Image 1 (tube, helix red, strand yellow):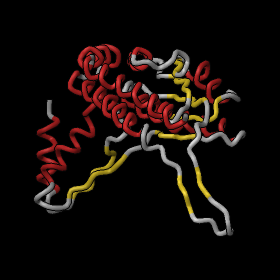
Image 2: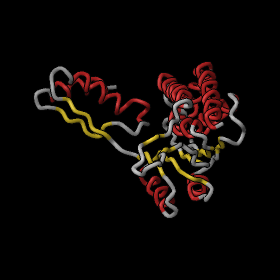
Image 3: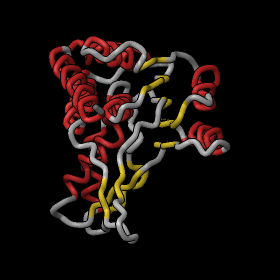
Image 4: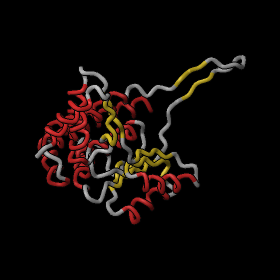
Length: 252
């Protein structure tokens, strides 16, 4: 029965992915109006949701457990995958369809139900994603959207005793609060918080590519991504060329 249920969930996700493909342009335009990224980037945001939904649809037939040799005689050891229950999710404004899809689709294919609180600045894109899931056949109530500010909506969601696990993407400050709220009851908690990376250029063969990467990291996605490099390490042999080219690329 459970194998059939997993396949059924996978079929729903596949249909949702097909709908996302058909409506990609409309969804991207809604997102641009909602949060300001140019269309070239919101199309990519929607595409990430498409890719994740197809990917998790495939995983519906691969939710295997394990069989392992037992150290005890005449014993058979195995494990199976069981859903956790209700999973609470809090997502940010910068990738308002991609990040919800990263959290929602794996939870659904594993048999969980979802309560998600999108960023108060970008509720429409998450609404569109959930509406498409329901249109694809997901029963009403399996995915629920809660709108509002963090203290009024996010905090009660994290602390609710019926929420079995929490997945959060956002600032380090808020993530610390989420972690503390989950710790008291040993609630599983996944945190993706603010951070910066570094990039480097060491040879004459790579410095031009490194310039383009630094420009994209600093200015791509309207500087809304959590991954822009805060430090660029450049070898002194290519420092001047790197600096001059970078200045040319970012000059108004």
